[in-house]
Image 1 (cartoon, helix red, strand yellow):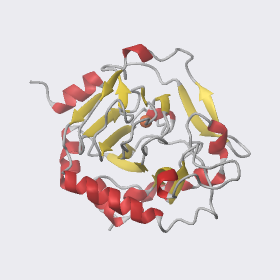
Image 2 (cartoon, rainbow, N blue to C red):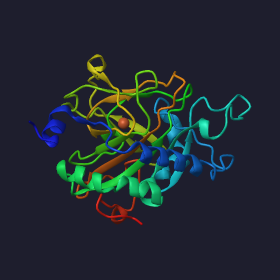
Image 3 (tube, rainbow, N blue to C red):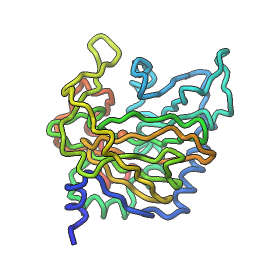
Image 4 (cartoon, rainbow, N blue to C red):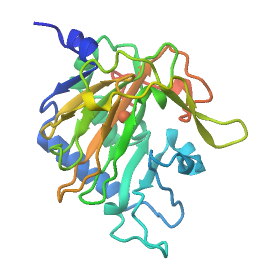
Length: 280
Ligand code: FE2
């Protein structure tokens, strides 16, 4: 039997079904919804869509690395700039420092099970750099184009590893993740970075297209954790179903890896903590 780490190294991802109890998923979703009620969107409108990178030059996005910030679905507003549905159902995600700033997300991110999993994968020297509550609401939840997470969290050497938690059943209909086993054994295609003088750009490192046809749906039940190698190409389709597909994602990097100043997400290096250290 290969170890978990061997499986991860050969596939580039791991599917751990029902890693988190359903009750913990429900509690996190309720908490996230409660957080949104404190958000005064009229003050800070921001739309996040990976398909439209020009929107990402928005300062609100660039300053969200060490904040709890709220991002809308692309189709959330009508022509008059009014929300087409209630605030909660208009949101695409919350990011990007929930794991350090919010006690509930901090304890979910640094559970005993997570410490044990990180140890099994040899990630004791990894620190948590980013977290996102992803709503993918019924009917409105948008697609996420094929990408590699290392594009957004670039380090030398490559060290980005993601942990994606299905807080609800993730199916083809509600926009589950798609990836190919072994897909991580490839080059990094691009780097999303800050431009000198403001804004962001996608720097192309390798023009080779992704092999999208080899990717398979990773349908998982509520509570499952999918561990993702930073070079693994993956994507998800829009949620056209009547059921939401909420997820929580954590990204880690090696504590000693070189992390360029030009990366979009900025954190004070010494504020980054591993799975073992609770922020609260
Ligand atoms: Fe991703």
